[in-house]
Image 1 (tube, rainbow, N blue to C red):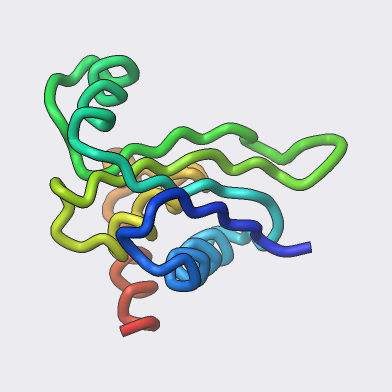
Image 2 (image 1 turned 30 degrees about the horizontal axis):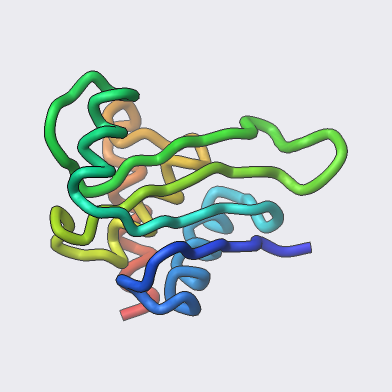
Length: 126
């Protein structure tokens, strides 16, 4: 098995999104499963931001984790990452950031570990 990455939209090449997603997941010890990365417009991400975070207006990236520990009868469904290119300075960083959130990392509570790992992953590929 391996990480299956579904890319919706074309803001970043599918192969690049797959590589970045796989590196982020593997860095958290996850090598198998499924993740979807979708590039959406400002209106769509603003609606999601309002509905799920009670924050108005668009944002750069939102993550929606699904399986916490993996499915009993199949590969782990990590979840979905939504990225708004209009509100993102670095799309590759947004992919890594979103997938790291799907693995359970949270930069608001982890004393900088997630953002340090994110920077390291980006150094590997640049």
